[in-house]
Amino acid sequence: MGTVGINFGAATSGAGFDVTSTVSAILALSSTIETPWKSQLTSLAAQDTALSGIGTDLATLSSAVTALTNFDGVLASKQGSSSNTNILTLTAASSGAIAGSHTVDVTSLASTSSEYSDEVTNAGDTLSGSLSIQIGTAASTNGVAATSAQTITIGSTNNTLATLATYINDGSYGVTASVVTDSKGSRLSLVSQSSGLAGQIKIGGTLTDQTTTDAAVNASAPAPPPVGFHQGQAGADAIFTVDGLPTTSASNTVTGAIPGVTFQLLSSPVTDTPVQVQITNDNGSVETAVQALVTAYNTVTADIKTQEGNTATGAAEPLYGDPTLSLLQSQLSASLFGAAASGKISNIQQLGISTNPDGTLSLDVPTLDSALNSSFSDVVGFFQNTGSFGDNLSTALNTLGSGSPNGAISLQLAENSGIEKALNTNIANEELLLATMKTNLTAELNTANQELQAIPQQLNEVNEIYSAVTGYNTGNG
Image (cartoon, rainbow, N blue to C red):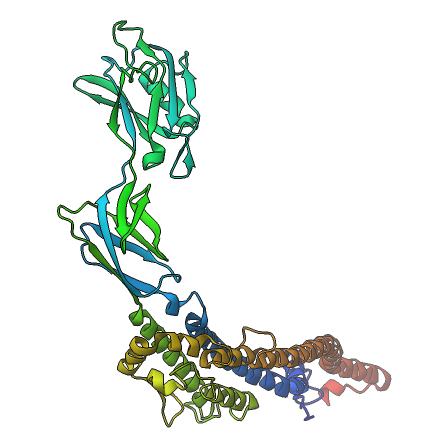
């Protein structure tokens, strides 16, 4: 440890010295023990930043791989087309869809049952009687059992068209009610909540307009047919064939007729012209996903290469010479090769992926497209089978990144954190010692300084005593 000089001039000057600056100088000298600790913390923080950046980019690469290795990922996606979108349009194709061509011949569309009442001159007229609503006209229609008729008794809370509509909508009657008003008056409209034949509405009971006593607005019993309610539209199932197989659907949104495919029936053809439905693998999305993998891999490679050089100031990068870099580089490189073959696909070159001299990858899209068109299932296996390219790369990333507590990045960050904690503890302890030292030094030096400043007064007192004893005036000496 060095020394600190105190400049207070002549001892008899009474000038003393600057206690604050002297204490600061002594503490600065004593605090040099912290310098290597703080320097190491700065170095570790730079390493943490670099490691975290690599960890983030490894996570991006892992996500890109997962998109291709996930059984429900991009390799399972399908595209579909319709030869006549005025008649049929495709709305979804799940992972269960199989590439192929299908013929759909539409005979008729599904419809939703509706009923409406005779006009009531005034919407606020008071009604009396009862109304029954039944959904389904047979014990079972296409496997769907008809509901039992539900009777609504008209009372003070539901005795106008508006309050009756609200009453019906608040209940569970299988219909949606509304009041329609035009120049002729107001009518109660009932629309089934179930499309197709199974949603057919059947109305019973008798309603009477008490305000206009001769206006019956409902039907009588099922036989004879209803008098006051009229069928707006009958509930009917869509009728069509798929590849010659007769099929029906209660809805115009059809699911299951073609495995994994949902399509919408829009109209019946004027002529008997079947619609061709084509289901294909989604090559474009796969190619985008593979390019994302290549780009993410190259980003990680660039991260590693950056750490192998110097900064703009000429200093070594934070991770220069760190064994973690070598581990990342070797395992990532090894994961590109040695994968188990899947049918005709045995290496990444057949997918259009090539390695460059600098360790990065390049993708030739036409080569990948050709592999997808000729050997799609083999491409899937090369990413998803046990021991495949995708499996090996996923395993490597799990052992390297920060997503797992046992990943190389996670372990290095944890090791750095332990060292940083110990260094910060040392610094904190040293700061406590320095604080105590500052308090003690300040007190001691203030005392010394006061004594120095008192010397002239003490000398003057001595001279006065001397003069008094000897009669010699030292002041005139």
